[in-house]
Amino acid sequence: LEFYVLPKSLVAAAKTEEEIEEFLTSQEANDEERQSRAAAKMTRRAKKKLIPLQIGQNCTLRVPDVDREPADPKNFLVVVMAECEGLYTVGCRERILASKFTAADLHVIIENLLSIDEAPDAEIPLRTAVTKTTGGQGYVKCMCLSGCSSGRCSCSRKRVLCNSRCHPGKSCNNI
Image 1 (tube, helix red, strand yellow):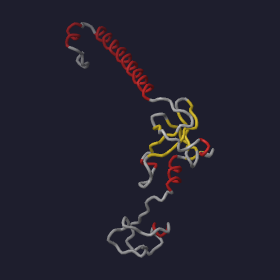
Image 2 (tube, one colour):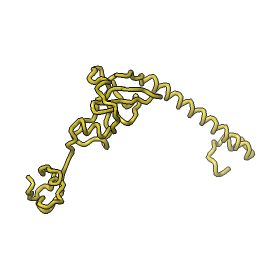
Image 3 (tube, rainbow, N blue to C red):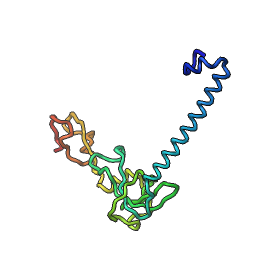
Image 4 (cartoon, one colour):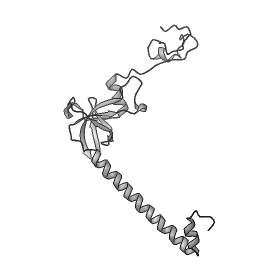
């Protein structure tokens, strides 16, 4: 009895270990019932909030930070291509995106800027689609100490001139 945290009224009323065990099992059953009721309530509320999307509807898709470069847009224009069990297949001007998305991931826009016919049939990852749309310039910077004269300079290898983010305060031959 000393290992359980029980109400004082129960400890005073319960004389045997069996009575305490019975109380604990009834509490566990009540907890499971409450949890299942709360889950059902949450799903009902989510279904009311998220209206189903129509095929051909234009949406924006928030691009995760790991899938975009600093100059890339945070939102990406897509069109709903198909729906299967609450997951939507979407396409962009580049191609159809390989991942499936929920209605919560997609934000409907009023204008029809993109049609289903404009999306080619091949699949492409989201990261590649965003890079192709924006040009994929990205950030290139080097941390050269030797003035960017050797072949180890990442800017020289990519045939890009060094900029203000590269080795500030050091001399550079690649300007």
